[in-house]
Length: 338
Image 1 (cartoon, rainbow, N blue to C red):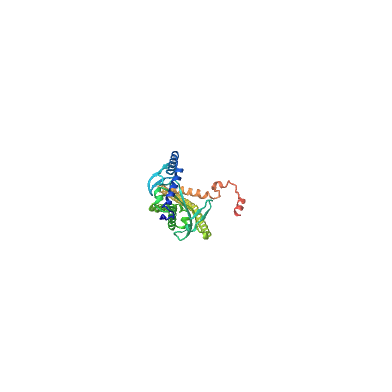
Image 2: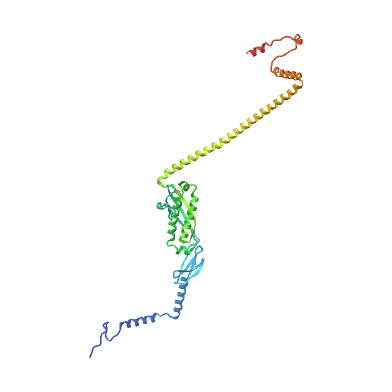
């Protein structure tokens, strides 16, 4: 009797073990096959899962960008919104938040700051070195450009702001950066940085650039203080000199004006007096020509009155002199002699 052929699995009769495995799986599936009620439960769970995957919330300070296969299809406003699960994704940048970038220093979570010299040290236009620490504040004005036009937008803003500040400081003098020129430096840097980011299509609006601290490096801070102190002393002395000048010049001008007015008044008085005397003489001369004897006698009497009024003597007529008792005032003579 011929023997039956063996199959590759070493079994006789051609029975396939794979059929046994499939038969066992079918039997187990029949045992765990869900009932009709369980089917509805599975469907309900699937619906809830789809809703959870499709509904999303956009916060009040955010803007939602819905993408389908990597392409932005629509923009949604704050509030509850829906997307197609597994096919659409959502990005929600904070478009109302005022973002902050620190340059030249860093602030840790505890509020402590540390200087970053490689960012803060800058060269001025008059070849001096300053340590400049400042803050850039910006808002997102185009969410799509902000997210997808520039890779790593935060580092880009950081580097662009540092470059802009270095350029403006490089055009400024050290005294301007330390004193009255800070506002102009801030505005110029803001304008330059905004132009750079607009060229990049960064989708941001620079709100403000604020200089936190502008000082000379620590190694030369003492020398800068001495120079600043000397400048303050110079300004103080200049102001004192200006004050003295402003005090003495008006007085001198007033005294000069007073002296000039007095001289002019004196000259006018002398001129008027001379004119009056001349007119009196001419009037007397005119009268003298009309009656010389009368005028001569008048002039003689007026002259004697003027001369004798200053002489301490008493003149008597010869007819009356004999009736007067002679008196010699020796006490007066002794006082005049002494």
